[in-house]
Image 1 (cartoon, rainbow, N blue to C red):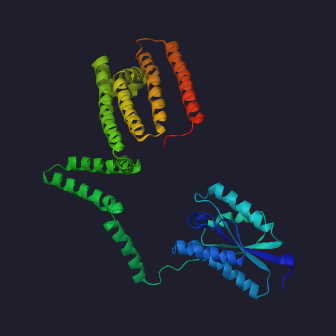
Image 2: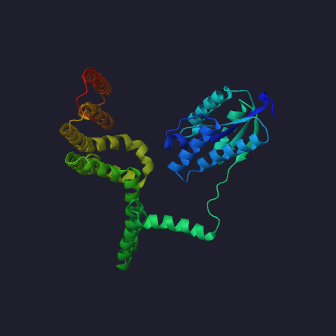
Length: 374
């Protein structure tokens, strides 16, 4: 038998916190029965989870050392889902907690991959590492099983609506448009159509536009207010952008505009004035677009009885207060009125009013019992 001071701590590591995220078990887990129970719960919760195999491997290593008469204990430590420094700090605290429960001469680290082995320096700073046991999970032994796995994922991509509309639907639309345009001798337009469709798909998925629209519809009938205000605001926003270009053409000599287009380096000389005229033309409609969207959100939250109506009201006030500084900024850029003092005054007044409104509203909300839902 080993001496008491020669005991080893067999440590299974779950750096991304799958055990705590998928079961009700909280780490650190100490002792053979507790580790076996935790591994079983994780395997039942997610049979494909590789961490469960490393937990069972730690129990097996514990039994092997015990059968030889070596003193040891087995435990599990977990990090957090995002891994990184927060996970390492949590693991270090838990390892210190485990080491304080007995006199251990070293640690046997059991991992299922290179990510968990990144905590080796942390454990080494607390106790020497006697051994590292890496578990490699055997998924498929034959080519037939590999094809079965691939076939399952291919069927999911084709028949699961969540994936098929992006993997099959978007390329289908691209090929359809491109084929029709090429058929009529419009190869250049086909390329433009492909770029527009792909760009739109990336934009919708990247910014979650589809999910936002679905969330609005789930708030029926209030969601229709949000959809109307969003669509109307977008249309006015686009018109505002166009009005900015029109104002530049109308306010500046055409020769200067043509020279800047022909030689973009001249934008360094005329850019400030052009931006000023652009803002003068675009600002009213762009601000109106934002205001329509915020008013739609306010009406939807008001109809639902949500406390977010206060937030929408503050945003509308803030939008109104920002208009004057932005308008004065455009005037200063065009050189029509070189009054920087007035611009600073608008900014300071807007800041003071915003502070007063936010303090008054949110102070009133906190002082009252919340009667409205989120």
